[in-house]
Amino acid sequence: MGKEGFRGLKVWQKGKELAVHIYQVTNAGEFTRDFAFRDQLRRAAVSIPSNIAEGDELKTDKQAVRHFFMAKGSSAEVLTQAMIAHEIGYIDQEIFRDIEARCREISSMLSRLITARNKR
Image (cartoon, rainbow, N blue to C red):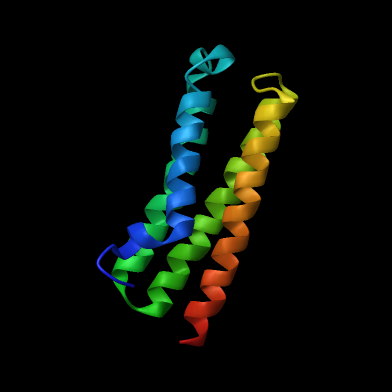
């Protein structure tokens, strides 16, 4: 893995970027009044890179894969919450499509990482 550890994983980088983006998006509009929904969306987004980092640091493939699956689940949670946010008018179509594309990419990358770790 090299000196960078989990920070060298592209999927971790993309997960962290998504979490930062979610924080920026939820700092405005209706999210400023809907604390519960905002906080749930933020927690799900932060959970993606957090579980990737934790799994990678555990260094056993079985433990790592379990955490990568949790990150994949959190990505689906973020996508679901973004769908709801869009449908209730909290985010527009462009922001939703961006979040959707990011979640799908992260999920796909995690699937490949899980497959690779299961083969080791």
